[in-house]
Amino acid sequence: MRKPISRRDVLKGSAALAVGTVFASPARAAAPAPVAITPDLVAAAIKEGKLVFYSSMDLPVGEKLGKAFETAYPGITVQIERSGSERLFQRVAQEFDSNIHAADVVNSADASHFIPWKKSGWLMPFVPEDVAKHFPDNYRDPDGMAVTTRLWLSSIAYNTNLVKAEDAPKSFADLLDPKWVGKMVKGHPAYSGTIMTTTFQIVRELGWPYLEKLAKQRVMQVQSSTDPPKKLSLGERAVMADGNEYGIVLLKEAGQPVEPVYPTEGTPTISGPTGIFAGAPHPNAAKLFQAWLHTRETQQFFVDFTGQYSLHAQVQPKAGRRKLSDIKLMKEDPAGVEAMTEEIKTRYARLFRV
Image 1 (cartoon, one colour):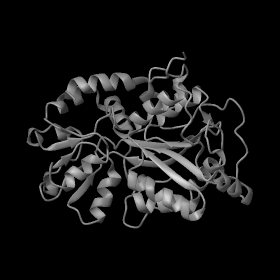
Image 2 (cartoon, helix red, strand yellow):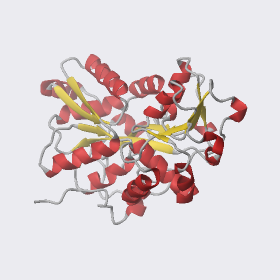
Image 3 (cartoon, one colour):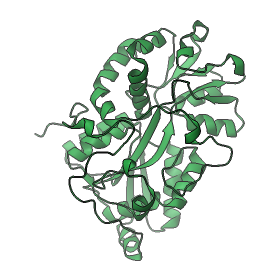
Image 4 (cartoon, one colour):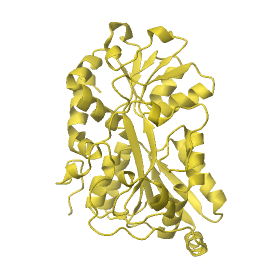
């Protein structure tokens, strides 16, 4: 029986994914020619009639995208299977080990997942026309296996009803102040790809001693990165130690008493790539969805609706929102995350006793 793939199955050349980039390894073979959305592709996709999308996106986001795709291409039904990225990774490994090919397209909040998936030959090379024309090379796999569909941040935040602006934390170091004992909430890296990536960047920049001190602050632990913004807006905690920034932005725009904080040390940055599985049961629908998902129109819709960021050169940030260029960012390193995942899970569970 073939051994199931694990997060320990790291690429020998993991350093090929350079710090600050998502897809930077040299291409082994020429990527396929870019594909446009044509009547023939649409007809072939409609004939298949279905698309199965494994996604770490918030369920309302995935569902809204699915409905938009169904509206654009009547006759194709989209099935959304949503889970936290780390759980999603486990599910994919179990299915492939059992020779089950249920999913067509996958989006993960942990870019390091695409390292072993690519290594194992589980991904289908496919380059949408818009990706070839408008996405930066370092956010595209050079062999056409995946592209970064969305980018977002994991910030600090506070409840403005419970914390005055002048008293709010300005840095990760500020979270260690005794005044925040029992008043913070954060996500869990064993469930959430966003928090896994965030934890890696914080450990790299601030070291494990920082998290050892933070663990003594009696922090409320939740699973998904979407949970801390909700706990904050409800007033269940005064400060968010990590969680997705876009959740805070959307809640603030909806009139909730929350405010994001971009730490002075830098804000962790997370990429969400999307790829097509080589064994996709609906390959033409998968290609159409991947091409549609990365058009300017869909990317603009996605940015406006979700508060996340797009790498499509023609997409503009929604009025009133911060630009990435105005924020000090921590650099990404998916290969580093891949190499440290098991250590992060083990040490984090021991420190936070969860």
